[in-house]
Image 1: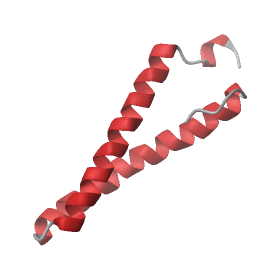
Image 2: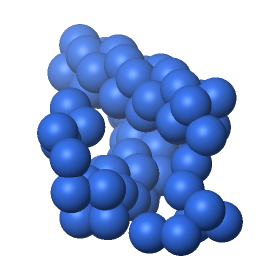
Image 3: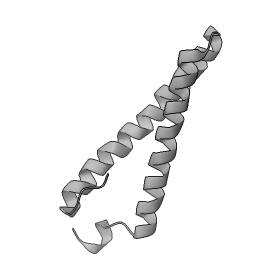
Image 4: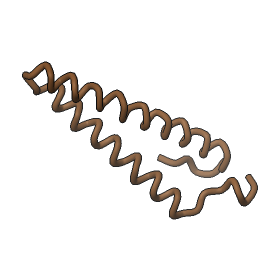
Length: 76
C-alpha cells in the first residue's frame, strides 16, 4: 500500500465513530419498529432503517477491503 492510499489515524477514527453511530441508530429504529402501533410511523422507521442500513453495508465492505490492504490485525 503506497502513502496516498493509506488512511490517517484521524480519518480512521472518524470512520469508526460514524460506523458506531449508524449501527446504534439502526438498533433504536429496530426497537421502534417492534413496539410502534402506528402503521405510518412504522413505514417511516422502516424507510430510514433501509437507508441507514445501506450506508452501514458500504462501511462494512470498506472495512473488509481495509483489512485486506493492511494485512495487519483486523479492525473490529
